[in-house]
Structure formats: structure tokens, C-alpha cells
Image 1 (cartoon, rainbow, N blue to C red):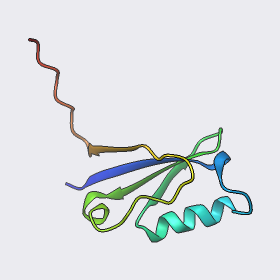
Image 2 (image 1 turned 120 degrees about the horizontal axis):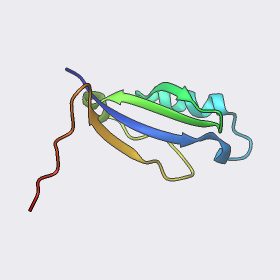
Image 3 (image 1 turned 135 degrees about the horizontal axis):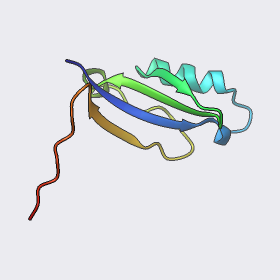
Length: 81
């Protein structure tokens, strides 16, 4: 089962003179696939973990938060101490 790496890109903070489409195309060259764009103009991207080991995260002026999750699995429950 594939594992995915996720990234979030705030398109409102795109550098001047850069089109949102150019930013998304650059991310696509790095193996990122667009999942959705929210109403507040935030793009969510994903790529398979195998591809992630070879490529860098999408270029961004603002920090990108990357979350690694397994597809269709239940996260482990916290243990009580």
C-alpha cells in the first residue's frame, strides 16, 4: 500500500510576479500532485513516499508543513503511563 507525504502551500503568499499556476507546475516537477485548493487559497499537495526520498519539497517563500501519514490506516492509540 502506498505511503503519502503531504504539503500545504499558501498561494496568498506567492512571491510578486509569480503566477499560482507557475508555483503549482514547479511543485509538479518535483513529484507533487495537487489534491485541492481551499476557498482561502491554500493548496494541498501529495506525493508517494518513494518519490519523496529522491525529490525536494515544493519551493516556497513561506515554510511548508509536511505531514507523513499512511494511507487508510488507523493511527496507534496513545499508551497510558
